[in-house]
Image 1 (cartoon, rainbow, N blue to C red):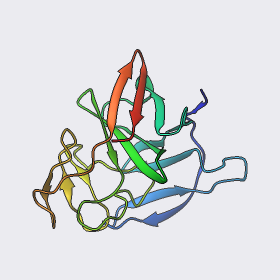
Image 2 (cartoon, one colour):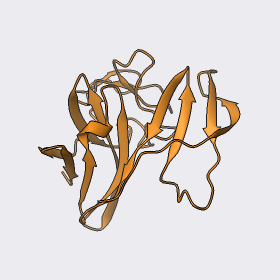
Image 3 (cartoon, helix red, strand yellow):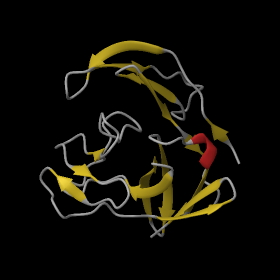
Image 4 (tube, rainbow, N blue to C red):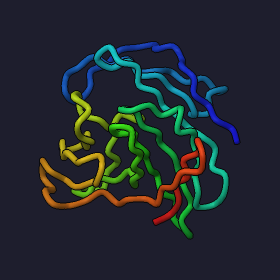
Length: 165
């Protein structure tokens, strides 16, 4: 299995939706969009990508996703390709489809940036909806009571395996 976890050099600054300075990266043709490093509020945010092992399944290393971090991936579910994300919240892993329950847009404007500043919630960057990481329940913003679509997740040793719901 191919796993890539690598920093690249930040090349320019821009403002995020909330007015915080965020470094963005410029990709070269050798990156193939598989790696990035965001510097946000002094914290390193990694875009972690692992290869899809089988149709409808994604595998990643649990050791590579520390508490408060996340990974993004794509899986094939029948004829649909789903963009998903996995979070490590308080040492427990949870996987969801990367789609806001309110608008249907991806939660992350910046790649792989899902957590609130204090790390307690998942936040939709479009309208600020907040979700509990452990259940996907919307607890703030325009969609109270709605839920993110959960993906099946199991662990096999150090491997995290996400599959279609």
